[in-house]
Length: 99
Image (cartoon, rainbow, N blue to C red; front, side, top):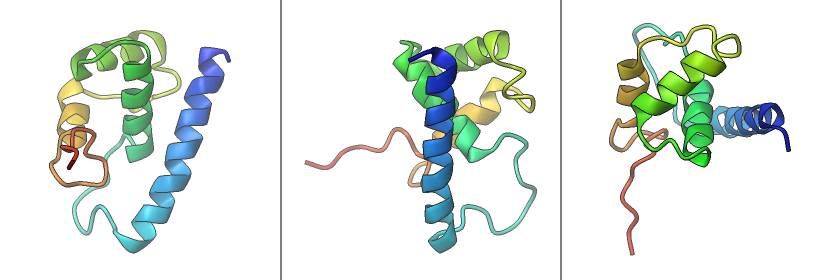
């Protein structure tokens, strides 16, 4: 599968799952919506990890360098990193697994 198709498939899958989750558990109740959607952040994280980039900074740099037209609202790396690492949030990619 070409990388372009993989990115699209990951985005579409995350988007549909997040829409289901957010109907029952809204992520934000006040404040401004972020420019980069949660689905975009998750897509970048999943694809970046798949490509062997295991640090958020490296994932952000890769997408900024190679895929910025697909992610036009891509901002500072710290924004994505903070959103990914919010403990207990539905997009917390680093939750500890219980045995």
